[in-house]
Length: 120
Image 1 (cartoon, one colour):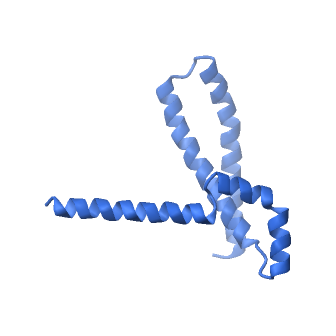
Image 2 (cartoon, helix red, strand yellow; image 1 turned 90 degrees about the vertical axis):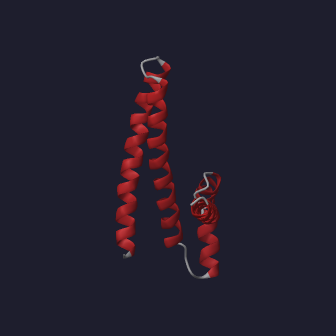
């Protein structure tokens, strides 16, 4: 996959994300007005979370993709994008959080497999 493909995919995800944000405004108003059941709101919340997490993760990949190789340029890039990095780290969409999430999922997978095989 070339850099242009990653950027194209990012732009598609961005479009979906911002369309979702606009739709959520309408849903939020309907929920506040009592026109939306709580069970429906919970279903919507799950879908919103999926779209938000996907957008945040691809945003981090694009951030890394554009990260310069030279140390001086890297420092300038990090400084210029510190708000983005802070937001992504806070949302747990940065490198460390994604690796931790994957490691925890692997650990849980192994535990489930081990329990399943021991119960046979």
